[in-house]
Length: 150
Image (tube, rainbow, N blue to C red; front, side, top):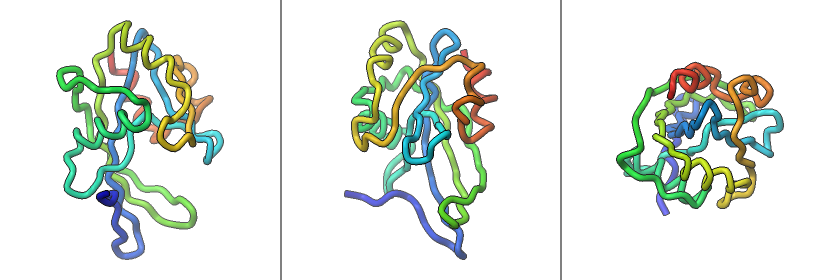
């Protein structure tokens, strides 16, 4: 198995991540992290070495949600770059954000997934726009991106 594209350079970890916005009628699917209570993210994960971002996204969603993404419904939105500290380690992260063009069938199928099928460390739920702060959706900039998605 290939390693995550995560390097330590000058005492700072560089992570390359992907995430996808599943949005339907002003509801957004989030992943609530059980290990870091009070934080949530959009579904996705780390890119592996020698793997395209889009392939990482499809792999992560298949592993974690047991859901097959359809290429024609995936759209690249934006690359975010930010810094944070986690477990006394400085992190520089590049985050490639995508959107999935959802229909009612996608929504109904994804609504059935309640827990990460790979690690069981996260729960999934659809939330409305006014709940983003309640679940501390990170990174904060992703909230503005979500609100612009149809």
